[in-house]
Image 1 (cartoon, helix red, strand yellow):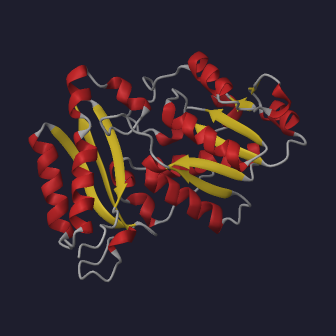
Image 2 (cartoon, rainbow, N blue to C red):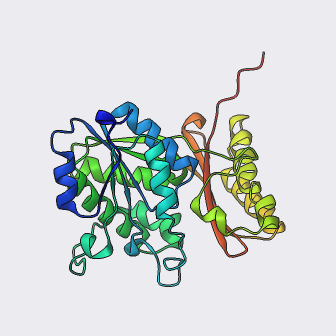
Image 3 (cartoon, rainbow, N blue to C red):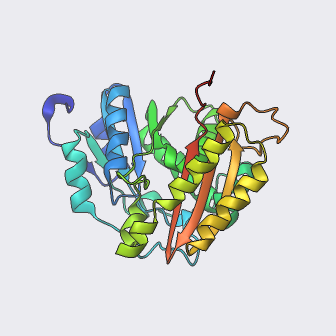
Length: 292
């Protein structure tokens, strides 16, 4: 339940937030861009287990959108978001405007490691600079002891975790399992852009990634072939594929085909556009039970 069972406080400025959180104990933080769905609410549920006070933020961060991306049409649903967070027992919502987060142009940026230029970073240049910069700012404003991120954005989770380690931030980063619709589609704010026909096709991304992961679990090591077969399967059904990639779970590096990497540590990631909507997903390779 919420601290003291008071109504959720909505803070629009860093000063309000600091006053609200004075003496709050262990703070667990869930940063979001709003347009919340069950996946976000699962993050707040996990945060509740990890801290005394749960803070969520809603801020659509211009820095992480490319020049031709969907910043202006990104769905903003503050009333519904507020109600959902309140229902989940969130103590405080930090909802700054752009001027509060960027009172002057943000000339100092966090530059991620080379991993930030791969996968998502290769198709969305500058994306992770924008993510790391805003997350670092939010961490400094909220001052949490714990922050919860979804595993659907696996590369983001890895990069934020690395940033926290390398800048010695006293924050525990917790990954939350991806929440899926019954047909396997990972929940995402961008799913709302899909037409009915596209929505019926959308679970194929998860099925293709799962198929590759299962093939690896049964002993296949020809990762490049599995990746290209996966890309071809999506393309045949009208997807524009950015990447389908097998990576090592620890640093998201490219695994060694001679099987020096334990297959249980591998992840299969994918991103592709269906019509005008870009979807991403990833699955872990799950070890198969040994067959006698």
